[in-house]
Length: 234
Image 1 (cartoon, rainbow, N blue to C red):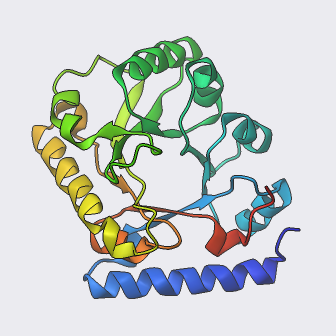
Image 2 (cartoon, helix red, strand yellow):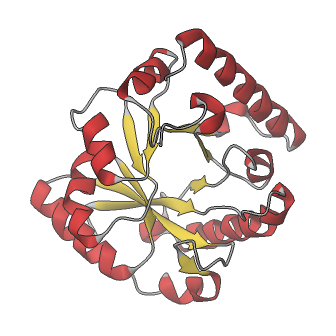
Image 3 (tube, rainbow, N blue to C red):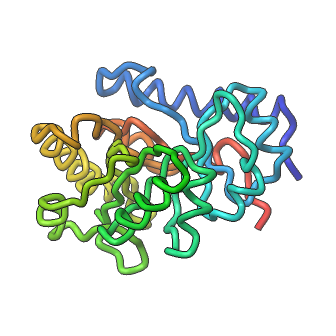
């Protein structure tokens, strides 16, 4: 069952307090951190409640679920695909998404550009890096990052907006710090190169359990589900 407006408001207030405390700790502005409301497995009613509370950016893992909830564009609402996208789902993903955060190979870039050209649509993409070095996680391997960004295909319909990663699933947020720092350094190196990386400003990292460490290491987007919506209706 979805949370009531007041229940979700309390959760949002608590989350903002955590974000603010983390920002104070590292002398950052609260406005420098966006909340991506992870609405996977949540109902349309829960999404509507979140919108009433001012939510504008939503993250969905599954393309079909994103289409069901956000297939009709709404002013001010941006949809982020935060799960891996199979080749046969790229067209649907491009049609519903404003941002695809999980690009991790050049073949996907080429296919996504072709789809967006056909749709006459420009979208933001982010590159997922596997900073946890866990086989169960998607992303560009850390030791392949430098070579990956050397020779990217031309993609006039795709804006390279930033980098994304998932922290280590150890139960200790500090275990993710080194990976988050690596992501920050990688973004800085790309920005120095300019050109297609001029707008590569975002760092999507940190979730409910490790958002403080992510913010301290420079996260500009945190992806939060449980802390806002409560337990998911799997």
